[in-house]
Length: 114
Image (cartoon, rainbow, N blue to C red):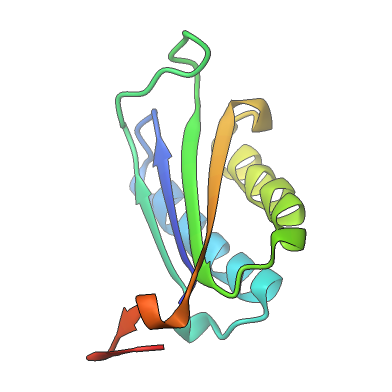
């Protein structure tokens, strides 16, 4: 049920894309203590985006999950920014992350909800 989507203002090569998606999926499962079978990640590269008035590498990230504890968002921010810096050389100072805690009844899956 965790869903991480990343919008990057640079093209991402296919081998980088696969590596980042796999790493992000594993990272979320571990950090959130949820089975990876429920984790979904997506990546949109080459998105027209300015941050602080420049087109230097930047990212906008959304993490939505059922039961996302507010006390965990600081740690998740550090971890996600670290992943983007390691994989795509995007400075943490050029990453915004939106965290959303979703009620299970508002998250559909397999013809029902959680």
